[in-house]
Amino acid sequence: MSHYELIYVLQPDLDEVALAAQNERIQQVITANGGRVASSELMGRRTLAYPIKRRKEGYYMLVKATFTPAVIKELERSLRISEDVLRYMMVRLDDAEGDDAMPETISADELAGEAEPETTDDTTEADE
Image: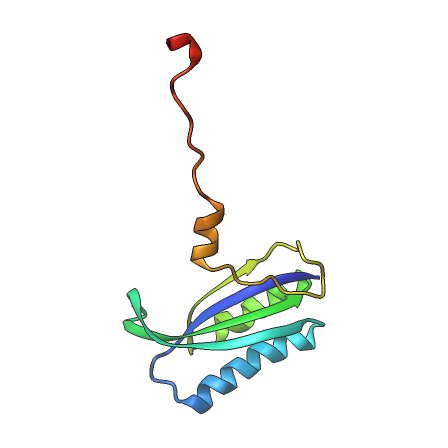
């Protein structure tokens, strides 16, 4: 099984009960097909970069899960037929840490520290 991140945007006029119900439907699709949900997070109501279906805002949901590629087809079907879902995107994560662990989040500061450019000295002994 592979690790996946699913992020989807829901209609801005939904209440908390409808948001929880939609999240539960997505989790049911994953678990009913043999997958496992590691975490689910409501990221809040945010302004969209451009209007989608004449909406300028939406609720963002992030789900981290582990499942087989066969689940993708059913999950995408469920997301497409729901009128409350404006957009969705699913990304397969690297399996570097094994099947039991989800990858940890790396902060921007840690990335900046690792990606320091190497300095090269353009002068050589032959130039002197």
